[in-house]
Length: 286
Image 1 (spheres, rainbow, N blue to C red):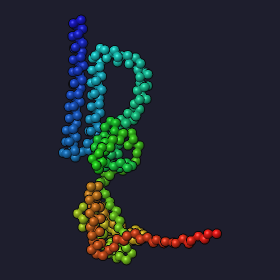
Image 2 (cartoon, helix red, strand yellow; image 1 turned 120 degrees about the horizontal axis):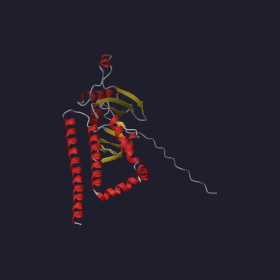
Image 3 (tube, one colour; image 1 turned 45 degrees about the vertical axis):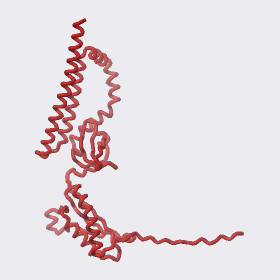
Image 4 (cartoon, rainbow, N blue to C red; image 1 turned 120 degrees about the vertical axis):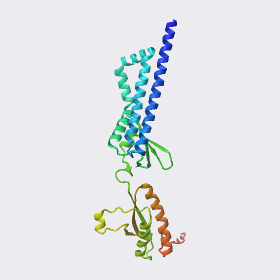
């Protein structure tokens, strides 16, 4: 009896030891990958996406192997495991149906890391959702939106959606600034003001190639794009190096152009409506 108790205590101690060792190894691996990612991004300026996904995969393998070994070391749990393996066909079928979505997410995550339609720190727009990629796990992608909220999207879902990536290939952004002026205003003067404000802004960049410069292609062109009900519509093209600069550039130009229009006597008209009021004649009673 005493030997049996000691044997049970030994098995329990081994079980607890394996579980603790598994957690410790997973923690150390996680810490190693965090340092690797920090060094890769801050020092070497590399893309951390593959390292981050690999870290999640290794941790998952460590937990699966560690907990499976701990269960195997417990005789009572080992019997249960053998019983489950005896019905492995039925169990595999049930697990297969139950885990279709999970496997789909894992496979989609692997394809995302291999083909890289987006990476860590890329800015994505998917339908009404917009945010910066913060993490890509085995199951889902985490976006951080403009309000610092986290959007959790399953990998299988985002793989089947049309996404707009603001950082893939070329980070430069073109702002198309549209202004309406009254029909009585000087069009040439208004175009010159818009062009001048764009060129004078420190965040505006020249995206023309050497060949385009030699051919005399205009920098920051301003064009008349239409005649509205109460305004002549102008559009100016302003380029910035990335999305953040593009937002600040656009906000500054709305303000500076409006102030210049006020100063130079260029009118931004209000919409005009003509209302016709008709008095109904009194109905005659028979």
